[in-house]
Length: 140
Image (cartoon, rainbow, N blue to C red; front, side, top):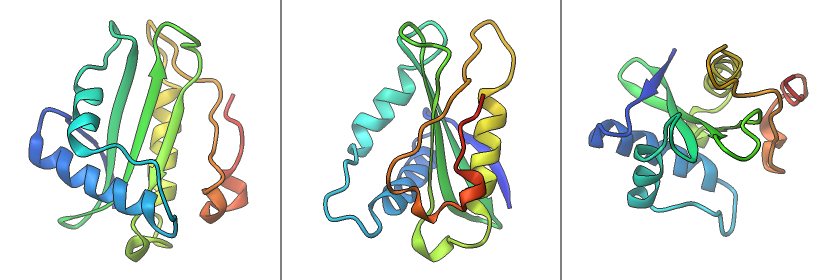
């Protein structure tokens, strides 16, 4: 499995990433708060270091199949030293390392030096019960 960055301007790749993200995020939830594809695409396309927020999409790929989706969101004006990372893995692909691989890459990416240091903390939602306890920690 490898983790790759997904270009929000590539309609097909972004739609595949979105489908995996939505499936993983909605699994086992009655009314998950999931944005529609069109608005998610706009949010990611309009992001960047000079915008109000920076958003990057990442995919875990096994063979020819996208098996998990992750994202990094950084507010560039308010609290830019914080980042939100999220990982969504569809149930049929869980327990194979896709989530752990995505999480590791997102934390690594968020900690990269640059003109806008991005992260020093992450937060997890209450749906993180599937994440092994050793992975549930604050990143400083």
